[in-house]
Length: 74
Image 1 (cartoon, rainbow, N blue to C red):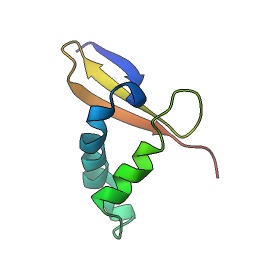
Image 2 (image 1 turned 60 degrees about the horizontal axis):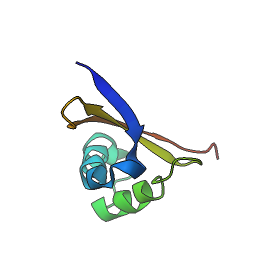
Image 3 (image 1 turned 120 degrees about the vertical axis):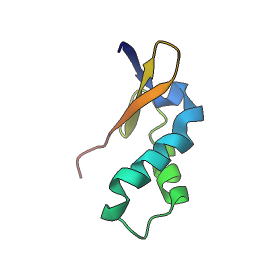
């Protein structure tokens, strides 16, 4: 499968789906978090020149196939 990596900031329509994926995969780490909490945190990464930063992987036909977030070190 070929895919393209781009900034989530350029594909904001995928933010709710990525938040759902994160809840499903990592929700156990912060059980008190809601989907709205995740969406708010992810929205902070809608940028292209600073951290936090979110990236998406898109298939040739524009389907979301993956995502990654880069966070500053605490």
